[in-house]
Picture (cartoon, protein in one colour):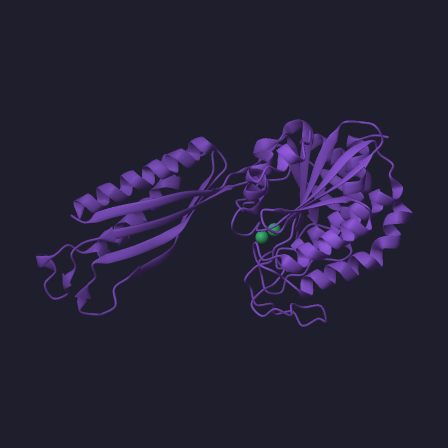
Length: 380
Ligand SMILES: [Zn+2]
Ligand SMILES: [Zn+2]
């Protein structure tokens, strides 16, 4: 199998660089989806299109076993203007594969090709290529479009590259590994008035400033010190003139947590603090609290299965320290047991930055992991 994967090395880099040159945003992955489907068909897989608009599921069945697993990659890019200058940099201004989904798509394609040639397992593999991971929760849309009813699997696995970790190194942990990401939008309202006569109105700016400071208390005073929460207010807009007390101030931001009970507590405290500070200032407070991506929670048995397969192709550890980033593979892990694993991307620039690039050396490593996982899960 090693030789099969090594023989794919140049082709994998070619595919990856081509995807990198043609980044497409959430649910617009038409070219990517077409290429993915054409290649999967050329490997002889049964290809189903149209889940979550641009999603693709390809099925490879070998032998007589009824068992099935799912492997998932994401295909979308980010609205970032690439600053790299190499030949394969983005040709679509303002769009960039800055999260390495070009590499993820390529690795899963490579695994489909290698397994369609070797056919050394017994069962069914559903290769899941989802759109819109960065925004729009493509993973959730795939699930709602009947992913697991149409393609039943015992377990589902996902993989993401991670800069700062060596190529060939894998890491994950059991339980919450990435955070739930909630989006908050708030408005503080009053009648507004003349800035020279503040006593004739109520000032939403001062109230908003105190509410923002009040929120700093949630993580430090309300959340159990052994639990984790981030409350970040990242936008604050109000007023257009130096001599007018505005009639509203708008604030927005995000909340990250691992545990639903902490998430509930943060939302409850935001409402209490916002409403009560607003009442003290005689202004109105409205909070729109949207639960966006849930926490990515790895199942214990599958965590160890993934780590064991990874250890056969590189080094792997199960003591990864959870991070506050989020990931919509979480929606699939809520439906089926499974595990999400990080694969080292060497010393590349950080994810979501304009100088990031997926490391082509990591492509055959990722393919080898997927292949090993299939062989271990569905032994011939
Ligand atoms: Zn990302
Ligand atoms: Zn990503």
